[in-house]
Structures are given as structure tokens and as C-alpha cells.
Length: 142
Image (cartoon, rainbow, N blue to C red; front, side, top):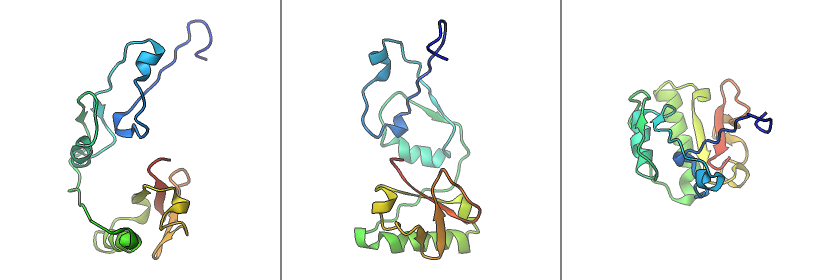
């Protein structure tokens, strides 16, 4: 539709998802950028942590306060066990439903410690195929 006379094309860029360190698209297209300065997808606590790792125009978060962010260190050979332990804690102690949890890996899922599609006793599913009682398991890049 944007190719029709009078059509419009909208291009959105999110600095939180600038995984490839892309160049400024507005300059390439020859249009003035219109900054999107409100984050509505994260809790304020997740936003505060993530905001330290991004560049770009200031943003404010409109999400709920949320839970504290927990950092859990792990050596490469212990990642699978530590993620499994944290999933068990969330499900068993905190009462979080498995289908309300997402595990994101920095590798392609097939190259990750979770390639079998299960994390301990927890069955997993990709983000684009959510299923009841299954943990979302996907890669950050996808």
C-alpha cells in the first residue's frame, strides 16, 4: 500500500533491540526521525537495568514497578543446571505458571544447552508457538 500514490511507510527502530548496531535509518531514507520516548513493554525495574546498556534518546517507562531484577552468575558448563533451578523456584515456590516464563538464550536454541526443548522437567516451546503449561524458549536474536 505504501507504493501507491499518497501511500505512507512507517519504519520503527527500538534502541533496546538494536542488536546489529545498525546505522541511523532516518538519515538513509532522508526523513526526519520521530523519537519514540515511551517504553510500554517492560516493568520499570527491568527498564532501569536494561537502560544502562543502551544508547539513544532518553526514554521513560510506563510499565508497572515489577519485581526486583536478580543477577545469577553461572559458568558456561553450569548454565543449564542454574536455569533449571531458577525455573523450579519460580514454578514451585513463587507459583508462576510455566507459560508465563520465557528463557532467552544468547545462542540459537539448537546450539544452546536447551536444544532438546526441555529444561529439566519443564517442556518448552518457541515464542511464536506459545502453548499452555510450557515455558517459552527462544534466542535473543530471533
